[in-house]
Length: 348
Image (cartoon, rainbow, N blue to C red; front, side, top):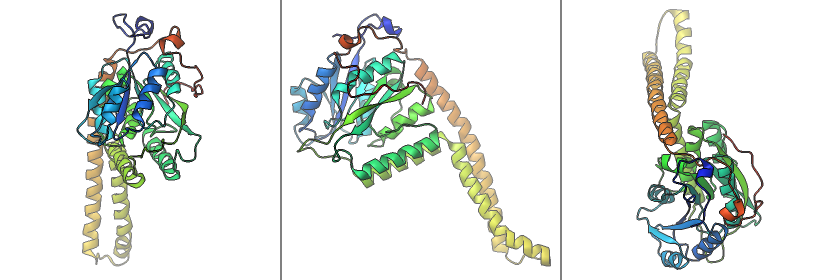
């Protein structure tokens, strides 16, 4: 199989070709999976295509197999379960993940892979640029921006299109990713994992189109939006416990002070405390604030140790950093400007 020289990237390999894997999560995509496989085989002929069939009720698996893809069955329903299985089972040096709905531009794949390799990145996100009003519903656009801003506020500088299904990963990223999510909230977890370990990442704008006729979206705006918000809340508690519990402690202490003000004023005027239930409640709220703050401090120490362990697991995997020789031939002859503008690399 054609590929890029491993030694040129300093990855400590055996000098064989750089392995590129295409991962295509699918559920009931019989109308589009063949075109996706064929388009990416044309733009990345060095890549091996893996279609992960997530309990489809149609002929998705058979059509993907006829198109030349390796088909893997995933019994647990949900995109997060598919990504977990794909990252665990597939061995490669560079991973290209794309949805099987034929909405992403396959010709941009060589530029995304090249950008990852040229700049030693761990993830490159294909930020969607829609040219068809039907491609990106207004509710989805608003939800994407809202969720992206939430993650940015909680975890630092984020992405412009956090929920894009078009991404390129290094082996370091894939083999250090814990993959807890079960459904479409997996994209949120992918972004947070990179931000938490301060990985070098980038975005490149890529064309995004509407689904072909006969293909239907599996995404429910409200249901999946609520699940993604829940995922952000859980990640906030798990990854930023000191801030999470400090907010609760501050709210409890503030409520206690507000309730105590009338009691203190009455005591200063009369020397009496007439409302014992309120006084007891104020004391309980202060104790609750102390307990929450203690929980935050303890869990923050635990979280720091867990992050250090994840970081060591990440560093134990060789990188694919280095210049790419003869890029068009190595990556399948893709146009250097294939529907993508150059982005600034580095730790966003």
